[in-house]
Length: 561
Image (cartoon, rainbow, N blue to C red; front, side, top):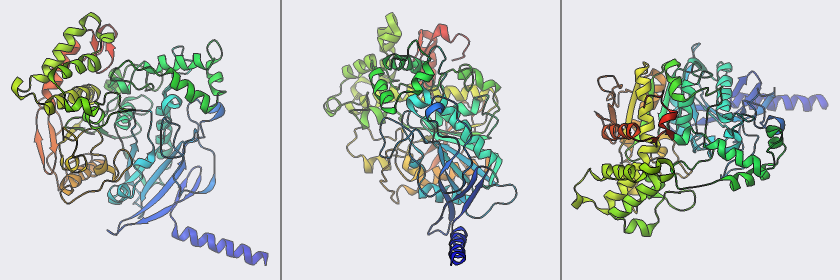
């Protein structure tokens, strides 16, 4: 009887193995799920594959270590998300897992290209679930590539850093390095060609891809980059703010004057979270995020601007939206949207209101000192000057207020990065998304109906930035196809050109601001935010403080701005 039972158990296991895909890795076998789509596409899905030991207890505030051998494990359930301010999913410090989509048909000996995708969320929130969708499986992995979507530590757990270097920081970036190393080591099981790995992301994920592309630890581990709305040269993506906040947390927790790291390790998650809330200060500045990458002498040994010239050049596909700043200023307001205008303010927004918000939100006295009034006036005049005074409607003023914020946070830092990279021999293709049909249908109440930060999310991943699925219409299809095809083509060939859209041109010394305007059709145009780029270069030269990088002139004397 015992032999019969053992035989039945073996048979059941064999039957399961025959129907479920298996991912063979150097830490064990992972049994996943076969996804079959109406189009006939088949994709192997693996959820919650560990790439590092849980960063808990003695491993908190430490670089990630290799995951332990697991022999065999089911990989059919989404992992817990990393600790963060808010999330609809269960959170845990034990969060260093990746989700994988692999073409069902085994590749030839060379392997498929890989798309190593990093989620966004300002380095404070986010999770792989946002992108682990059937849409991504079908439209990316199903087109002949392996998609890897890792978690990384966020907020204080991923980017705490103390001024005394007891906690050097950048643990979230080290997590991504670890995930990339795991990916390369297990290329055979992933059906992956290590010579054709593209690292990409959106927003903070894009800034992280930017950092990985130039770090001495990672720049040789992949061959291409996709950056959508995010650069490591933006202040919110690279600053010293986290050091000041972490030092306050250390004091609140009673760890000052002790072995800081060991003391912080001894605290509970609740104690750390409460201290982090108390340590948060907001003075109205655009960069109100507490934790981000910083110089650690290791992953980022010096300012990122210095790293570009020594990094291996990589083909890059980059994108920005028509007005990046609308999301956090006009589309949403209230808790979490520190620069969002309430309805009563938007309903009666005047030229004087615009000037006041530039003066008190964009160009702050705390940074510009006795140059504050002059700088604020120059910024306001620049954005107002695009139309005659009689045409400065409420809608125009709201558009320009949002545009000023978006230019500072996203547009100019990204363009500066690519100017540095162009000078170092990188091939860069730029997109500006201008399709507004989705906005008009889903956000009819919004005063300025232009595509903004995150509003291309659903076209990219099948789910919008906040987890909802608003759905596509026939009207959306041309833009959706152009956008996805450009990424698929780029990952597979190094060029975004495809049969559906040949209209791409890489930037060059002759055309440094050439771009593709992407809507229902695609057209090559120039210049790419050229007027804004020239203006903010002028501001950085004229005034002591640079809003884009969050640096003072005396601190950036060796950095070409």
